[in-house]
Image (cartoon, rainbow over all chains, first blue to last red):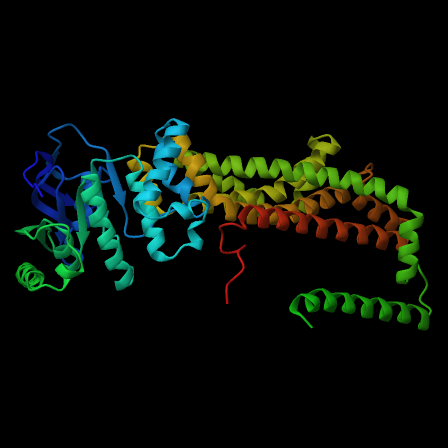
Length: 253
Length: 260
């Protein structure tokens, strides 16, 4: 796995203060390289989600800058909730970004089929969100994020609300997709175990104000599978990351 | 007995009992028809005066329908306008509320002075009916899922795309609730205005028939006309409920049968 690609986005001393006066981010600097799988790990309130929204352009930083060395990239965003339109079937939901971009009909149809194929929902194109399980809704949400073939996939604790069995399954499917499609993923999570399993690199953040505390590489080779999840290496990485997280939180009030 | 059979059977049984009691009381106490006609007499009056009453019903229904249509267009249109501009909302919303809280019976005579009668009746139906559409649609348009809003923003949706693809569909359940209330209210508005107009002279709607029959002590016809009005109200309610169910049955919790 090459993690030495060119930079796709970098945050320089980004700060964010909300209208309420809460300082969510202060002096956050982060470089993400093309094709990389990076996790932002930290306790709730450390500004992980805020940084993701700033990268997505959904929120403006109060200080610092975001740089896109190769020009701004197409972005896919997966929220903590599936965030599907309940009145539209799965195919129409996945198609939404293409529709909003006035994409050609035939092309959009192909892209939707392909995205659904990728997440294993091809047979559920005509189903409505309420007819799907939590895991399938999340798959549909991922398919929608993939529909525009974005270079950068931003995921905000997408599996936090799922049960462990479903989460493991989706973790595996996400890794397979990442290897197949070679996209850059920035994955926000508060789970040490999930971040170690998925990422090449884990950025541990401190809470209030959020900034980078440690940047830990997980050099274990891909493909990773259940053997990796139960290996001594995995346990070792988890210990290292847990310790870093503990220290990050100890410094906080 | 199944739940469904009970839900239909019990009200029908109740109706039969009430009609029977009514008939017995009228017969036993020998109450004259100009005080309280029996159910049989009401029915035979309904048939005998069928042509006249039917024509009046049609007049009232057309006013109701036009008032409802205008209320739907006005209410939804105004709600969309409010959702686009806070300044417009701040300027107009208080007056919509004033129009709603002032009793229509008090406004009707004034309208009859300034507007030709058919227009005044229509205006009454509109004034009563448009507010629930406006209030409910406004609520619906402003309770869109925040993440979906962020998603549309991420994909740089235009104002029009946002309205058409997100806000309107997401407001549909509340909008339909508003319309269901408006259906009944526009009938009430039409009736109130007809009665006010009737006392001012002309008119041929059902409400006018009721007022007219009252002056002539033709009580059986009053009852027959009242019966028709109730039936019209029930029909409007069921039609709008069916419309609402059809529009929401695939996705909204209110219209989907619960799995047990």
